[in-house]
Structure formats: structure tokens, C-alpha cells
Amino acid sequence: MVPPMPGRRAPKPGLLAALDAFARGGLPTVLTIFAMVLAGGFAVMPGAVAAASLPCIFFWAVFRPAAMPPPAVFLIGLLQDLLTAAPLGSGILVLLLAYGAARAWRRFLARQGFLLVWVCFAGFVAVAGLLGWVLQALLGWRLPPAEPGLWQVLLTIGLYPPLAWLFSRLQSALLDAEVTA
Image (cartoon, rainbow, N blue to C red):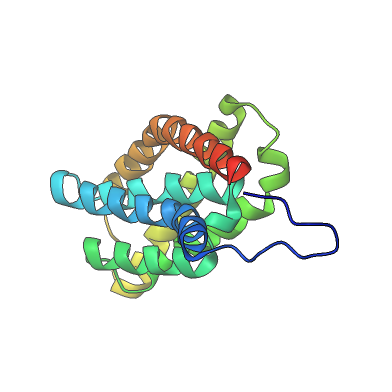
């Protein structure tokens, strides 16, 4: 790109630059939806869809919050409810609350090492799992069994390290692309 002449404004970015920025901004949401659909299609565990969504939302809320806005989290929660046949709105509420909590802790978590972030994530997952169980009990008018929820919490905690590794590599690539653009 040629620098503007003194006294003149830089030209507006072209259509390709705008599409590139849009694609980079929407990539975390698209990857989260892809992970959920993949988990729903190939997993035999009923909690795999929710286990795939929460690590993605947590990571992007902490390390690149502009790439995972609240409307995207809402849509991901709606898709999660539809894929898991959960009471409509329960996944939305759990994911939005987890997203808000992760954003609130963002300044602290973004400066910490992986192990402490993972431990904090485990705490978030435990609270989110309990909240999801309570919501299912209230909306279904019966106490659901606790064991599937516990397995889902463990699966979610276990999925965070590989997803965080993948997303940290992706974030580095996105940052490099933004610097060179």
C-alpha cells in the first residue's frame, strides 16, 4: 500500500480488505459453530455439543473479545439448545453468563499462564454446569440426573487444553495478518 501524500487522507480500504477484516472477525464464531456441529454429529455423548461450545466462548471472551460479541454468543447458545434438545433458553443463558464472567475476569486472566487460566476455566465450567442443571430442573419440573452433567463438566474441562492450543495459534496468525494488512 502506498502511503498518502502529505495533506491528503489515506484511501478507504477496498472491498477485499473489508471482506478480509469481516472474515477474520467472524472466524471464532464460525469455528465454534463448526465444533458444535461436529461434536453433535459424531459424538455419542449427549453433552459433547455443550462441551465444545463453552471452551471456545471462554477463550475468545478472554483473549479476543471483539471477535466473539454477545449476539454471536446468543446465536451459539440457541444452536446449542436446538442441537441438544435442551429447554430453549437454558443454553443461551448459561453461555451468556459464562461469557460475561469471562469478560469481567479478562484483564486478570489474559496476563496469567495457561495452568492458572485452565484452573479458572474449570471453576467457570463447574458453576455453568450447576446453573445448567438447575435451569433444566426448573424448566422441566423434575430433577434431572446429575451424572451426565458431571461427565459433561469433565469433558468440557478436558477439551479446553487442545482447543486453547489451537486457538492461540490461530490468534497469532490473525494478529500477524492484521499487522501486515
